[in-house]
Structures are given as structure tokens and as C-alpha cells.
Image (cartoon, rainbow, N blue to C red; front, side, top):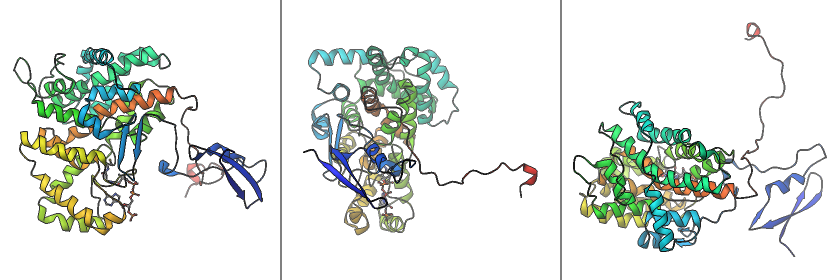
Amino acid sequence: MSDTLTVIDNRTGKKYELSISDGTIKALDLRQVKVNEADFGMMTYDPAFMNTAACKSRITYIDGDKGILRYRGYPIEQLAESSNFLETAYLILYGELPTRSQYDEWVQHITLHTMIQENIKTLMDGFHYNAHPMGMLISTVGALSTFYVDAKDIHDPESRRKQIHRLIAKMPTLAAFAYRHSVGRPYVYPDNNLSYTANFMSMLWKMTEPQFQANPILAKALDVLFILHADHEQNCSASAMRGIGSSHVDPYSAIAGAAAALYGPLHGGANEEVLHMLDAIGTKANVPAFIKEVKVGKGRLMGFGHRVYKNYDPRAKVIKRLADEVFEVTRRNPKLDIALELERIALEDEYFVKRKLYPNVDFYSGLIYQAMGFPVEMFPVLFSIPRTVGWIAQWEEMLNDPDQKIARPRQIYLGLGQREYVAMIKRS
Ligand SMILES: CC(C)(COP(=O)(O)OP(=O)(O)OC[C@H]1O[C@@H](n2cnc3c(N)ncnc32)[C@H](O)[C@@H]1OP(=O)(O)O)[C@@H](O)C(=O)NCCC(=O)NCCS
């Protein structure tokens, strides 16, 4: 016997059997619950998708209560320890770790697509000198759709594959160019003899030397940070990617929308906010007073809390360890002491304990980025580079899922009924 849920409608006395699969009922099955034939049928009300699965996915698994994050079944801690970003990207996109030849071919494809059209550079030049690099990234990745018209062929797997290579390869170039623009330095072209992260660092920081020598510890740290940020199942920007992509627009336009979602301070903008918060707190001695303010609702403790994790974010644990390695190379970020004190007090405080508010990925990542020399405006940009992999994986899965259609939520209309237009002269 299959699992069912029995619903009794007290309005009519009717009984309905709704089938349960994967622990869910189909929202559309509720539509049979009606008071009469003219009734539209029952809907669910779920603002912010607190309890609605919008897709079936095989990419990323999170158990928020236990603090578990896995890509395609592999624990994030193992990938951070043993994999590298491009290998993890392959895993996320294609479901399995690559063989040696698959890996070499994959890296080769990404490496060969790092250049961007010169016209994109001209577009970059048009931005104001103090333009936020994330605004520049969002605009220029969207603009790529005008250069790669074949990207509209979203139902052709070969075309999709090409856009995937281009997107993963060009995001660091766009990001680095946005940074160079903001500091008034000439753009540095990609160096295809360097690794993914070393090349990114070269495009950011190369001056007159023939080849940029990235510090291997910092390049490795950036690579690990990219692994940690590569996907996070149905978060705000992934949902935006799926939602926009469901209209069958090209992936560059959809990524621009996903990146815009990431820009917000409640999502990818949070690590930037953490740094602003630490600046505002100023010293360790001010931490208790700050916590007190948060508890009475004056602001939030940025980098704390998560819609899904009700335990320590597993990525935050890896990052905390990584911070020590990075600070061995750079000087210790003086804000770390304030952050550690905030964490210590918050983890003991009833307000945070009761609400299960733990440090999330953004709490420490900003400190590392800042110690490496990134200005805070670059933080969401740094997030977008690896998350591009997750966005594309979610997008492809959506396109290949026969259950999916154009995303189009319902509403509960609470506005006025029909009324007659009133000429302006007669309005009071
Ligand atoms: C991530 C976040 C948006 C999740 O929000 P959410 O799941 O909608 O949780 P809610 O906003 O309903 O919060 C639940 C309760 O915890 C409190 N809370 C949540 N995050 C908090 C924080 N960072 N500081 C203080 N209180 C917080 C809320 O005020 C609320 O309290 P209440 O029940 O007394 O009203 C939220 O925790 C937040 O704003 N965190 C700071 C921003 C951040 O770090 N974002 C990065 C996410 S990776």
C-alpha cells in the first residue's frame, strides 16, 4: 500500500486521499479540495518558500540540523581537504569525480576560454571610477549574452557545454577586470600557464613583472574557499537562476539575475556586512554592548544564522582553520579578535542558543579575504565566481527535468474588487 495523507474538509465533510512520495504531497493534488465545482480549489500559502520543495535535485545535500553539506554525496570537508575547485566543479556539474583524462580535458577547456571580448573591456571602461565591482560583474556577465548568440540554444547539450566552459572561465576575468577598473589600473589579460586561482590572482595583482608569482598558500586558500562556495542547493540565488532559466532565456542573462540575488546583504553580501559590523564595533571591549543591541532588535549579528543550518555551518569550520593558515602568510587581521569574541559570547547567550543562531560561511570568510588584500566590495564578487558552477548545475538540472515548467507562483489576492475609473478632476 502506498503512503497517503487523508484530508477531511470540514466545510464539506468530504475526505481526500493525497499520495505521499519522498515525504511530500503534491501541491497540485490539493486543488481537488473544493467547496463546489466553481471553487478554484485549495492552494498552499508559503511566502519565502519556507516549506515548499520546488524541485527534485541530485546535486547538493544539506542537513541543517546536523550541519552536513555534501556535493553529489561527498562531504564538503573531504572535498576541501583533497579536491581542488575545478575538479569539484566537474563533480557538481556531471555527478562524478573525473578520471585523469576527463579532468585534463576539462581543465584544458576552462583554460582556453578565459579571454573576454575587447568590447567587454570598453563596456567596463564606461563605469564610473567608484562603481561597485559587483554591479559591474552583474552587468558584464549579462552582456556576454550579446556576444554568444549560440547560448540561446539552451536545448542543445553541446551548446550548453560550451557556455559552461565560457562562464566558469570568464567569471574570474570579469571579476578581476572590475577590480582593476575600481583601482584605476590597466587590465591584466589571463595567463593560461597558471592555475585557475593563480591566474585570477595574477589578473588582480600583477604589476610589471613578466609573470605573477602567486603565494601558493594563498592560491590554495582561495581554491578551498571556492570549493566551499560552489553550491548550496536551493538558496536565494539558485532559485533565482532556476526561476529565470525556466523562461528558457540564455544562461548569461540568467546568471546576471542570480548574481543580482547574491548581491543582497542577506545572501552573498553578508560577508561585506560582517566587516562593516566589525568596523562599527571597533574593539573587543565593545562586543557585549553590541550583542545587547542586537538582542533588543537593533540590527543583526551579521554572519550568524541561516535559513537551513540550525547548527554550526560546516563551511565555517573549514574556513576558521583556513584563517590560521592565511594569517601565517599575511598579517593577522586585527578584527579576528572581535569576531572570536562575538562568537564566544553569542554561542553562550540564550538569545542565540534558543534561536539556533550559529556562525555561517560569511562570518570568517571576509576576514580572510581582507587579509589577502581584497577590498570589501570584492567579497560578493569572490562569491559569484565559484557559485557560477552551482547556478549552472541547478539550471541544467532544471532544463532536463520533465516536471519543470516556467516558474509562476500563485497569489492570494487581497486587493479591492472591480470599481469604476474616476476622472482626475473628480478625485478628492
Ligand atoms: C540568514 C538569515 C537571513 C536567515 O533568516 P531566516 O531563516 O528568515 O530567520 P529569521 O529572520 O526568521 O530569524 C529567526 C529569529 O532569529 C533572529 N535572527 C536571525 N538571524 C539573526 C542574526 N543574525 N542576528 C540576530 N538575530 C537573528 C530573528 O530576529 C528571529 O527572531 P524572533 O523569532 O525573535 O523574531 C538571518 O539569519 C540573517 O539575517 N542573518 C544575518 C545575515 C547573514 O549572515 N546572511 C548570510 C547567510 S549565509
